[in-house]
Length: 453
Ligand code: TYD
Ligand code: MG
Image (cartoon, rainbow, N blue to C red; front, side, top):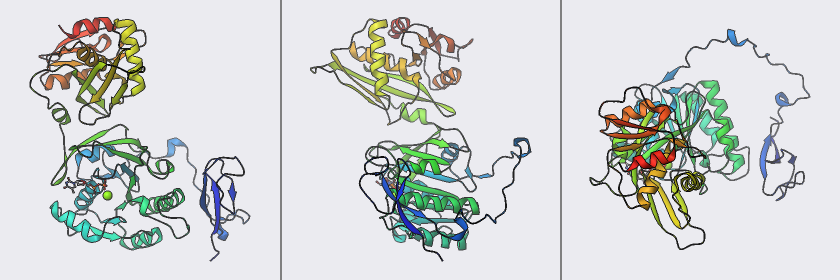
């Protein structure tokens, strides 16, 4: 067999060189050279004429669009995030901080799937004993799932070809290496090459594969973003690792909607699904306190009630602080400017801290009005009513703009006993849900007036 040739390629410009250097001689970028493999086997050489079969071409109308075959993971929250179940031959990347529960959820899922389909759990981080001990502690069905400790991708694929699992877990992709490269596991080249081999295996054998990926301090998937391009689905595990709640969010999904959110709680018996998340995020103190309001956010395909908190305090800095947890910081600065200009409330001498309770990230503009409502409440040290719900987008000219799925948000609020809702006029329903008084507003000053009524 012809030997694979070793080369170093620049990740910026794609040029390849026989030797590594700190700066790419071609484009001048620093630290971009990574080891790559050029396959020298006769088949891949472009100078030889192609002898394989030519690919089939169809018009779009001829392509059958039957539902992609899916099977359930026996966890309704995970199924929801995946877009209705796991697709045969798909690659799912699960990213998240260390200790957030990636191994736990995959072990639980695979043990359950193993009752119906063949499943293989490949771990490069823990020993077989550790995995078995965890399964036993969590009282999972142990007799079907096969576990393998291996980090060499060639060996993993060789075993998989014999075992023919329907579902496979690789925990984690950063520990896996290919013999074709000399660099250490976890590096960009190793991760990319291993993932490419696994992708090819998955597509050829219709095996669904979960890849576990670690997250760097900066929050990116360690190693390369390239992984995100190669896989079908990217899920992120969020939440504070010291808290109980864990949120699983789809950020890319070739087989379903993104921004679907699965909610779990970490207990001493593993991860438990939470099918009614609003109730959890709303576990508030009985008496109303300043700087807190509830908003309805839309997560994928369902509404969720979350509490937004603000602390506004006199600043002793030249540049007062604007800190957000779970919301966009730039948006806060913008909204405070709108609040000054169109609401007449200055905050230039105040530090403003915003937090979304429970470690949820709210990515939509519907949080704007709730955010300003808590800021006002904290600034004036006046509590907002406990049964008040606020949502709506705030525009730069102080107008309150509608948000998608207003009806469903209101229904969710009514279900949880909210009495009053301040919302964009365009979202106001003809008949409000029972028990809920809807205050429809078009301008920021109207909304602010309605807050303390
Ligand atoms: P783990 O799945 O090992 O995290 P990851 O693979 O993402 O690094 O999760 C480990 C953490 O979860 C650990 O800190 C302990 C906690 N945990 C529980 O609280 N209860 C449990 O039943 C399990 C299995 C783990
Ligand atoms: Mg782990």
